[in-house]
Image (cartoon, rainbow, N blue to C red):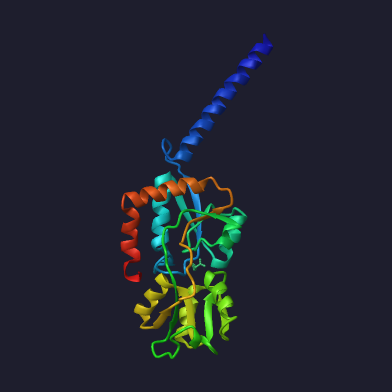
Length: 258
Ligand code: ARG
């Protein structure tokens, strides 16, 4: 008799536990519970119009709006971590974050260490200079100091260009610092994504020329290798493209930059 009671109690406990487990799952889907599961995104908020900080310090930009739209679609609450661009791939590899949106180009080299969504934007590269600069082509780079952001495709691109033209590379942590260095003449050239460079050219009255040497891959969302999230994000991206939301965000943030 005692044994029967014990078994009954055990079974009852199991049923209660299972029910609790169930309600947690509802939270994960963001349907029945108000507690949504958190999606941790990392970025490097030094890259307007894709990601920067507004006057109150809040991250804003195309990538931020896009990540918010994706998280909404998938029923997650988005949490943003700001770090150095150079540390983003490592953060994904260590699974400290679920995804990265940072105007990151989906290069083959990076694909060895992380997975990428389908591309959501394409941008070429540009060299920017002060308005009165004599540097107007790749050959003119000779003897100059060219600033690049650490860990970017521009850092790699500059290194391979160096084999043909003799110039100095100055790698910097932060993309915003590149412009300050240029304005204060500590570098003569900054090498950047075109959609970001053209914004600075307009805003700061700078000059520049397109990089004819690269055909960089599109920008995409990055995930830890093997992440299940990739398929969900690809589905969300497809829907956002089909319902016009992606275009709306491009019109809002990237229109003048194209
Ligand atoms: N598109 C370039 C790359 O993938 C630069 C990206 C820099 N992004 C940033 N948030 N600072 O290497």
